[in-house]
Every structure is written in C-alpha cells, then in structure tokens.
Image (cartoon, rainbow, N blue to C red):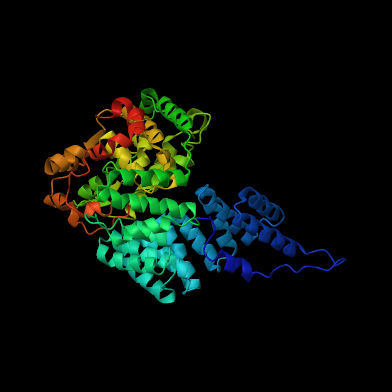
Length: 550
C-alpha cells in the first residue's frame, strides 16, 4: 500500500464493465456510465499520484450518487497515509454499501491495521478471506495483523498457506521472514530472505532484513552484492536508500566507520526527507503554553484512576524496547509494543502538530464526560491484548509529545522516560531506515536540533508533573542491570520477580528495529559508540550544544 492503492485494485477496477465509446450522435451516457468513466479517470490520476484531481472526480460522483460504493472506496484509498481517520470513514461506508466485496473489507482491515486497531482489522480481513479464500493479499495482511498483535505464532500458518499460492510474491516472503524474526527464529528467517534475494523478490528490503538478523565480525558475501546493486544506474530512490542502510549496517559491524557513515549519509540524501524545524518549535511552544500548571490543576480528577496503563517513551533508539522487555518479563505485565491509540485520541480532540493557530484555539475542550469516554475506550483497547494483566506497556517513543494528555486522562499511569547519551542516541537514529514520519533524521544538524526540542519538552513535563516520570538512563541500566531493573519494577508498583533479569528469554514477539538486540543479554558496546565517528559528525555535535556529553 506504499502507493496508497489497495491490494488487487486493478483487478477490481477491471472487473467493472468499462464504459463503451459511443459513436457520434449516440444518446448521452447514462448516469451510471458517466460515473464509471469519472472513476476510471480518478483511478488513473491516483496511479499518477495526482491525488487532488482524483479526489475532485470522486466528489463529483458522490454529489450526484452519494452512496456509490466504488467512489466511496476510491476516496477512502486516497486518504490512506494522509488522514487515516477519514480513510476509515469512507472505506466503512463502501463496505456498508457493498458488504460482499472482499477488496473493500481488505482495505478497511488494512487501514485499521495502520492505526493499531487490531480487532476490527482482523475481523474485516477475515471477512475478506471468507468471501475469497485464496486472496493472497488478505492472507498476508492477516499474518501481518497477528504479528503486530503479538501473535506471530498464529501468523506463520497463514504465510505458509500464502506460500502455496505464490512462492514468489514479495509480501509472502517478507511477511514470513518478519514473523520468524519477531519470534527470534533468525536462522529460519535467513533462509527465506536469501531465497528472496536469489529470486530477486523485493531484494533491497530482503537485504536490509537479512543484515539485521545478526552482528557481523567477518565480511559477509552479501556486502559485495549490496554494493554491486548500488552501482546500478537504474536503481530507484527507495531501493537505493534501503541498500545504503543495509551496507552501512554491515560496515558499522565490521568497524569500517568512515565507509559506514558515508552510506548512511547517502541514504538520507536519496530519501530527500524535509523537516520543518521552525513549525515543530512553534508546536512545542504551544504545547508548553497550553499544558500549564493552572490548566492541569483545573482539570485534576477528570481522568481514570486505573493503574493498568504504562507508557515507556523517549527518543527512538533510547532503550525503549529493552525497557519494555524487562518490564514484560514480569508475570503481571504485558508488553503491547508500539501502539498508536494515544495518538489517535490526541488527533480526535485536535491535539495535533498541524495546529497552526496554537492548541488553545484548536483543541476540543476536555470535559469530565469527554475524559470518561476517552479513558474507557483506551482501557478497553488495552484489555483486548491482556485481559488479566495488572500493567500493560505501550512503548511508542513519540508519546513523549503527549505526556500532558496522559497526565490528564490517567493520573495513576506509570510513565518511564528512557534517556541515552544524546550523541549515541541521535547517531543510532541516523543509522536506521526510518519512515517519512521520522523526517527529522534528514541530516545530522536537523537531527541534533530536533533532539533539543524533545529535551525542552521533557524538561517541561518534569516541571508540571513532578515525581510522576521515572527517568531510566540506558547507561545506568547497562552498568547495573539488576539494580536498575528493580527500580523499574518498583516504579510499576509490583513485587520483584527474577524473570526480569532474563528478559532475553522472553518468547513474546518483538516488532521494532531492536528485534535482534533484545534477544541478547545486555551489552555495553553501544555506549559512546559515537566516538568511532567523531570526525564525521561535527554538525550533530554542534547542533546538540550543551546536551552533547563530550
């Protein structure tokens, strides 16, 4: 769905009767024929990424035929990745108008999956398979849903079933490997990834996944292959970005640091991400102004007294996955991974980064009734994952932006802020193939300045919520794992359990960039790793200023 088109969309559009070209002086097209012509043109615009024109054509159809299922469907797909809430509304309407169309159910399910609403996602994808049992895209989507829902063991037979339909489909290979990696079965994943590379199936992604299944001490044969592929002048930007990241990872493992950083920098250049730092600074200003002590005191008591939610947050690559795994090794704790529920809640009430007028003008007034509705919905969402757990961990790092909302809705929730050496943290982010949602990694200077804004916001939260936020330093955890782990569990209000020291034996699924690392005992090789790159990262150090621990 990277091009915002639903699976098998072309099959679906072709299944509709194409409008006939009428000879001159023929009678005018019927409304249905005219609608079909406009929607075919909208599809062509969508393919050409002319999204505004595609939306306008869909609107024209819906103005005269408000319940046209295909127009609702196309309109929904046009919003996927741009505004998933609007996409969900249109796709749900399309399903309501044509409930026996498997593609409509599949696209609705996949969009629910994008916003971490796993139960409705699974329901609609299962319905798609009920209507069309051999729909390979639905099998893969259902597998991905179970992987993200921490049930990768259920995903495996779905991918194996898809493998029998088409062994060479990119989604099948990538999905199966991802499920195996999530379960820690790296050797098996390697087999499928190497087969994908040999067959040139989604090759750049396969290389990138393959090199992250282990740490290299000797140069693997794959490195020469990756470098050879990078020499292809016809390589598209996405593939080049992915391969540069893969090469950089291997070279970093091999301690060939100058070559590694060159590839990481080339990856960012090819990606071409843009980040509006001034707009983000204004948003941080507005957030600090809005969530002030007086406002928070006035709304004290609005939230839920539940102690179930736990929020592990901070910069990406700051130790959030490791912290979650330690906590989730406790028998009374469930690690739910990175959830987007809180962000959806924030967006629904106007607490977004797009609030150009400032939060005071855009946010919906938070009343006791609204707070009750929001907290009940959030707790129900968490309970789907672990009905009996005393604590459920959401480790979405970017929730650091929403601590004000957490404090209002869940005054008894535990908040764990993961910190790490600023230069190490930023460099680790720079090394990863993050999506466009993390466009602040576009270059080292922008990354360092973004980090300063994150730090400024966290200092504000510490002031307005004194004693509420437990700061866990990665370096402290590495230096004395047991002492820091005991502090973490004590912060959760739970009795100590020795299983928390054996977090790497946790058989739960892990679906973040740290999948390999959290299967290993704690190691200290990532501390002050930036010194290996010191001569190449001065823009980052300068941007961090006094936050850089030299």
